[in-house]
Image 1: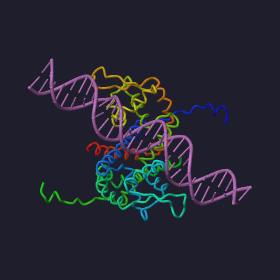
Image 2: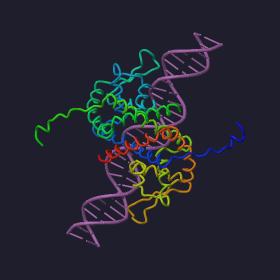
Image 3: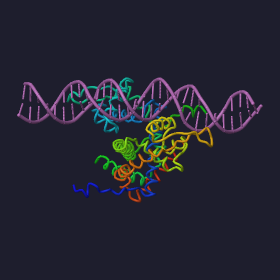
Image 4: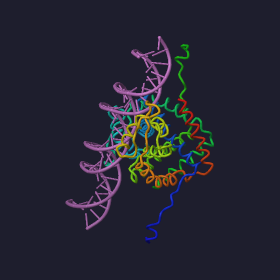
Length: 160
Length: 160
DNA sequence: TAGGTTGACTTGAAGATTCAAGTCAACGAC
DNA sequence: GTCGTTGACTTGAATCTTCAAGTCAACCTA
């Protein structure tokens, strides 16, 4: 690298007024929508939004079990956080862990009947709120646009 | 309310396959985009995403000061969380508090020169990442769609 | 097959957020 | 003017998340 390049000052890039307005609005949504869903779940079912998703993803797996690391990816969380969280869900009897019989390096999280039942209790009100607050307002065009926007951004985030 | 109504079972509502796919993708974005921005800010400037926004909003206010409750709204957080957060920023010398001289019930948060300087240091890399990961990929149509979607959802959330 | 490496968790402490109370200034009713 | 009420914070404890280490099984590699 040349001295010229080393000392080069990168011109700061900024958002246009329009971009900034959309960005701020979107960030408002990004903070407030999960908070609203959390509040409903917490009140009605004593679950956080992520705990709900952990149970929901588990219930969709064959034999209601899946590796911790895969579950962490599905639930959009780090493994450490998931480990603590599953520990708490385990104490409540909703989940238990077992070493993967096929490979001792992996741990499987398993949904219990009590966990499945709790999820089934929680789901209707949660889904209703998702529809009322967000998804129900999306037109087919909105759905297409949002899918495209999400996919593009997620690809960029994965590429970090 | 009649006995008929009291015992009425509400038919559960569910998401279509298409809605569910979009919703899951969007929630993935909602969790991962802030995490990616947090990581960059934390690494480069020892600030969380919300702390950054607190400083940014303060710097835009006349005399770089604003009521705690207004700041909480702008930063999309609860007052209690903001109070703890401002306490930490205060310890670092980025902010201080004073009772509103116009009305003793209010507290003003004030951005210090050190806070302003820290924000100015942090901003370019943060804005660059916002552009790279998200805003830069949005077409004018995307911007319009996203603004519409955010506004609709936020109106519904506010109406709770 | 012993020794080192990698990947998948787990753990405990430190730090942050949430929840439920508590404080305090201003206001309104009497 | 005193008394309750309201609204805007603040506080401390409980809970949760993050960070840095630690453990352990499987896999290389010599």
